[in-house]
Image (tube, rainbow, N blue to C red; front, side, top):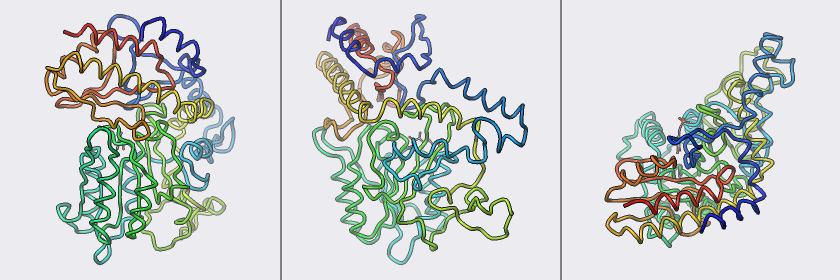
Length: 420
Ligand SMILES: *Cc1c(COP(=O)(O)O)cnc(C)c1O
């Protein structure tokens, strides 16, 4: 791809104008970074400061009455996020709620859904899951008096590049049979970028009587999701990665409709999960709100949810269908650039960890370099390309379709060509 071709592709890209809705941090040479870290912290929509100011103004003007007054009363503030989240997750509105943070939601959902009984005690996870998830499942097992060495099944999902990494998960589900209580997966694996075939996992897990929970940290806003239709039992996510809600932004959770009326879950409860009709009568006993809202503990984190609402409105306007088309194209082009680079530098002993099948990945590519990986990363960094380094030898790059241009890809290509 030469510069002219890249500029033409940008001109023809109907999503290109979205780029101007985001603040771009400036790199070492005074120009905006080519920002490939939207999988860690998405960029800030320029409309965020004024949206936060609206809530600060309500606070200043109304004090406690801001719960019922102002442009967006705080009492039902979390509901501003429900419809756009339901669209992103492929869920009913009653199945999702914005609340708490990701690891907290993981624990809350596991407290409800992980109920080891008899033979069925195990949690099946992908090996090398995000550390917070590993600590969460270890401590959930210990909470039930189960040694993680006994109770955890960790499935190695590293697969030859052309193949579907879901296969190893299916094999593990079948071989553990009725010992598995919960299959808990990162739908998009944070390290490799693999997007597991969720409907297949759900079918196989339900076949052996296990539940399926998903951590959507790297999937939300990155790949199309149909949680309801797929029959996923529960899920949680954060909103500061592909969903651009800002550092520490609110998490969210999904509980499939089929579990809404169950009374046998070990759910931890708080006043914001209480049915809102009688919440303020301060009754002694808990009456659950309908659906996923029953899982809320606390009143809405308004100052954090204001940026979330702004960013979700942008995602809604862009639309996952169009984003996915551009994402597949950008990632395929970046893959080609990286493959050419590897071909020119066999001494780096490099390979891509991300599946080659486009439907089995999101936008992230993970480049593993057994030699001089850090030098390649530093070279990119010095030339204005902000990627993500994972010790000991992997560079993660996420050409996020909302704000990555084809000209950005051209710049990556040119910078890599200068590496010696
Ligand atoms: C980013 C990420 C987290 C972070 O958890 P927080 O509770 O939001 O700090 C957890 N799990 C996965 C898989 C992640 O990618």
